[in-house]
Length: 65
Length: 240
Image 1 (tube, each protein chain N blue to C red):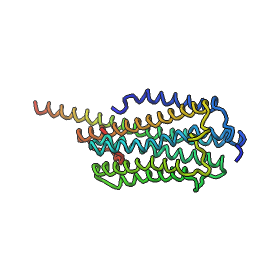
Image 2 (cartoon, one colour):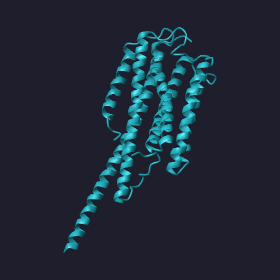
Image 3 (cartoon, chains in turn blue, cyan):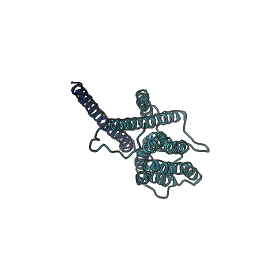
Image 4 (cartoon, rainbow over the protein chains, first blue to last red):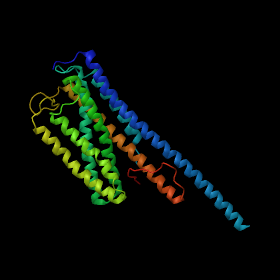
């Protein structure tokens, strides 16, 4: 089969490279969302730990009194 | 722990991809036979080589898991296969686009190279339902490793069988006799191959980093005896 003219072949080449880039970008976006969720959960956990420490300190003070 | 070195690896990947694509469009000459459409090969062939190598790497990690019982190797194996399956999707799509431009068809069923890659891809597509059909994490990891080793051994055999088969229309990028790529095209191809391999390594590292963080978070939550938030359960193996 003879080679396609440049203007005809260009859209196929562009499509192949765009598909590749879209796949990579979508994957990286999914991973970024996952990492954001982990970060959020970590913040929640840090808050939970701090609250628990405060409660334990308060209980300690009450017991001492 | 897994995130160490992710930044330089990502920078190297972006630089290599930029260099590779620049060489493709500004340095490599047009193919005398195929013309501009041949530029797809600088993406399609490295993607397929990397995907197949990734499947084999998944099998090697699975052997390490079966030998040592260390679940980290299972996570390496899972992530290698996972990223290779994604690359496999890109191989099939870019290959179909090239086939449409060159042959006038999106797919040709009597071409061994295409069909054999599809068989390998579909084989690995069954890895996920096979893995998650087993609930016990220990058994899940062990069975998945056996699958990865078996399927990983099938990949080079399949590749050899295709090379030995008489190709009807699929071009050979690296011909065993005569032909082959001229220097400028070979350089461009090798840079693209390194760039795609680096991309694979970066994505594997990124996924492992996320899994490592998720695993540590889960253990921290358990240690603090904190309630798990809704939708926090994961099906992929977690690593320490």
